[in-house]
Amino acid sequence: VMLPLKEKDKPIARKLLTAGCCARCVLRFCCVSTQASYRQPLQEILKKLQDFIGDSENVKSVIETHEDPPNKRPKLDRSVTLPQSEGDASTVCFINFVKFSCVSQIAQTIKSEDYQFDTLVLSVSLPAQLCVREHSCWLHVKKEVREKGLALDKDDVIQVKEAFKWVMQNLLLKELSGVASTFEVGVEFNHPDTDADCHFLAAACPDCFKPTKNKQSVFTRMAVIKALEKIPDATFLRQYPCPPAQPTRCCYLPDIQCLHLSVFIAGRYNKFCRSLPQTPWLIDGERRMESSVEELIAEHVLSAFRAAGFNFSSSGREDVDVRTLGTGRPFAMELLNPHRSRFSRAEMKQLQETINKSSEKIRVRDLQIVSREAMSRMKEGEEDKSKSYTALVWTHKSIQEEDLAFIHNIKDLVVDQKTPLRVLHRRALAVRPRVIHSMSTRFLDSHHFYLELKTQAGTYIKEFVHGDFGRTKPNMCQLLNSDTDILELDVEVRKMCIVFFGSI
Ligand SMILES: *[C@@H]1O[C@H](CO)[C@@H](O)[C@H](O)[C@H]1NC(C)=O
Ligand SMILES: *[C@@H]1O[C@H](CO)[C@@H](O)[C@H](O)[C@H]1NC(C)=O
Figure (spheres, rainbow, N blue to C red):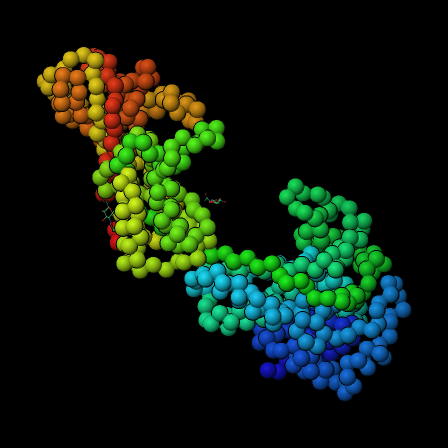
């Protein structure tokens, strides 16, 4: 690979090489944007650069003949050695982009966690002081650039991060044998040796550095960049060596975080138990019921996907003592950082069966992987659906079957529901009109009957039956002219009323 360098780049390349910049950093400052140039081994790039600047002598002698600019204040260690191999410290990037050993370390970490993924996104975090060094290097070549009338701006310099990814992503993919936007690897480099590089900025620009609650240091990258933009070149040069001094060591081995983007699954659940909340039931931090629908499902889903956590959501919810029958209530789960993400239909069915067999209390169906959008659509579509319920009703007054006949003729009854007493602690006080589309009854005995209702979603059924001290009007007590209470309630969810996703 030829380096796409032009005559005008020569003085810059020479200047940076003699300052101890690594060969790839020289390419960056020469604004080389062909990725392949950076991917060559460091020695090769260096050799080509040396040929290019036309010095037959080796770099060492270039350095020896180099003269300090007269106005340079801080002493620069002239025994600068050029980073020759991957892993040598370099003045500017001082990580040399990639120590090749670091690539295999990262690859090793990914492999050991056994992730399944199609594409890989690398996110790189470099220490903030790198910006200071970069700025110093820029000032170092700036004079040259201006004198020669070159149209080069600081923003034209290829960013370390970018060049780093060009080199690294490719190497990583090779190591991982051909994987490629669902998988993210975060690599965070630290370089404690040069942490103090930023400190003079605090005095030069006190406004730029304000303590923030959740940051360990005030020298965040954003603050450092802001300060570098604000302080005049002369101030910078008085307080910081230009070019920057060469560190003795490379960056420490990076902190590596692997993250697979969330996978979303959806399905429907039935609940056959009258003592199971949908989500963990906590009162003042104390658990009230030993399990929940969410947990019974999540336990198996998390282990199948080897995910780190989940968010559960559903189309509505039922009370702890209400069963959910029919085709089941639609639910969806966001699985956080799943290590496995591909499931065949058969495997999905297997997972469903595992859940079905694990407990008498719940069953699931239509379990499938969905998009993030499908999950939010489900939440949005909640309100305007009708629901079917069956309630077991007790009457104080003794009744006969004929006493219930009038109920069948009631259609689209509007009831005004003041926020029920039992949910007043979490819902605003309001009067909500709700429609009971139709009702039918099944007589049991002189004090009991089944009441079947089709209602607008969001209707409080229990309150409609017992009246909630007159807060729901009209109510069943008024209609029957007797005290009534609700003993059991089932919600029947029908598939056709929720256009959300098909079955597998
Ligand atoms: C999902 O759960 C995670 C961790 O528990 C949380 O940080 C995140 O905000 C949740 N996302 C949503 C959309 O609720
Ligand atoms: C799980 O139970 C549901 C509800 O009874 C049923 O429709 C579904 O076919 C079952 N699935 C498997 C795989 O057992």
